[in-house]
Picture 1 (spheres, helix red, strand yellow):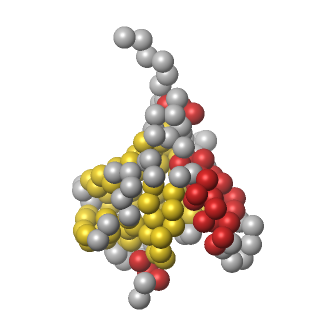
Picture 2 (tube, rainbow, N blue to C red; picture 1 turned 180 degrees about the vertical axis):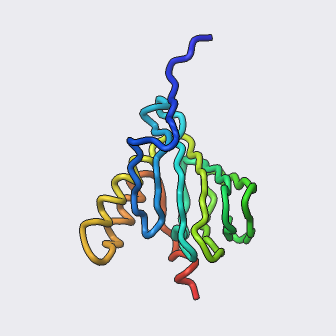
Length: 159
């Protein structure tokens, strides 16, 4: 069987662009363009108490591999604390969020399928650079554009 495409990146890649997503340092390691839209691979360095708001993806599944650190994942109504070496699979349609509950940056390798959220992160990074305060209506609209729904604040803001 012939291979239709492949992607090889050397570590560290001089072409890596680190995106600032609410303090998380997100690096696209394999883009959707490199995989003909099948998947995206990103690395996220998440600061203590960092992590995304509660949200869901209508058609994207995610796999998180915890490289180092300790994270609390909330999947629908279940809470799971996981640490280095753990893997978390989140199917499309699952309400979810996570938080780095450690005292230092934690590192995640994230696989998203199908591809497309790499473009979301690029657009979100640009949107977040536009002002001193996040434009939440614009951020919610960007989520909707990529088939996601914002459902609540990050865990760190839930008291």
